[in-house]
Image (cartoon, rainbow, N blue to C red; front, side, top):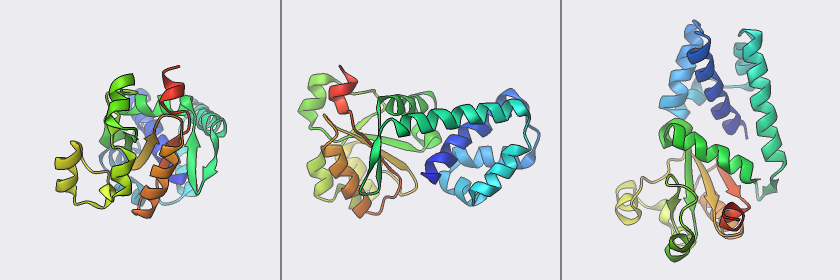
Length: 205
């Protein structure tokens, strides 16, 4: 959850730099690090206390913006569901915002890799949730796809293998296979995992 909060705060720091002309070298450094490398950003801002101190030095309007983002984050996580096996479940509002983050920036900037674990025939029937959503059917994950070498993974599935410092967001038809995918990803060494519990049934309803 803290990783997710840091990535959300990265968006806030970008907002500070772009709309309020923040002159703090530290703020600019953290913003650059957040969008160029989530891992570097995590090293640069190692604790919630450090980040709170940094943001508290900003104008009151920025604090209001941060409170808004926090309320939104708490709202859609709270409105989602309890963590299953340590994996946070999210609702439609959260999924929509995550997709928008990737669409408006990129996978690298947002830190998210959105993966639909339905079969290719299912995805073809309904269409993708969005063009930024990758397809990796659950059976391939169960067979060890996330443990493959990066080059082999890309050759096999057509997109870059998720890095361990990225946040995996799984979706399926109704939130069951995505739960299994999350557990398998956790076993493969991934720690930042989200599960869209509504799936395509909710998304296209």
